[in-house]
Length: 250
Image (cartoon, rainbow, N blue to C red):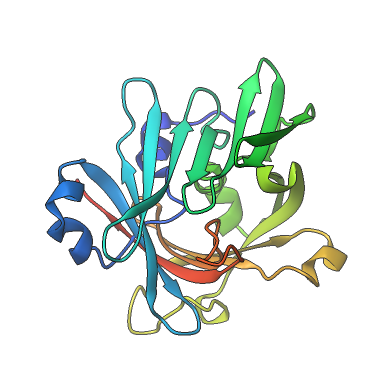
């Protein structure tokens, strides 16, 4: 397990999606009253239309964070609770989507990691015993922060990523890439950002899965952009690829 300076990691850990454009978020008083500290806007890669927002509360006294997923008009359609009791890259979580009554989650019972998925009350579970290096949900951000120096030094790091919707995990590899190699790079904006690529570690799997691209502001190690497959299905229940932009409040 890693040793970590918690203040830095817990400042950013909850990002899988935030936002650079959050004017609609702050314009809605009901949302502002919730004291969200991180917001993320997801845009369709083909049309550039805003498809949903993710709104994160601050970590509370129980080490929990709530995430609300809302439509562009502000209607909440899904929610998630993250619980940070162990390693910051291994939060327990529960996610529910009211559009189709889908739910997924991950929790620890002692040393056992239990993955859960279901719909309309039907539930399936699987126990993952070998989970010491397993990264869970938003924990990928903490994993990158914990290994920042190694990554920017050119190391390629492999980790298991939990996939509760498939009751399994996948071996992924993360590495730093040059800005122009990333689809989220803009020469006129974020020139000092650090770019990472996450892809399946096994080549034959990579033939069937596009990589995820991330952009970080090195001043504070804030995740600024995400590009790739969303953890949120589209309105028809199918997968969707998005660009997510992030905004942090004080």
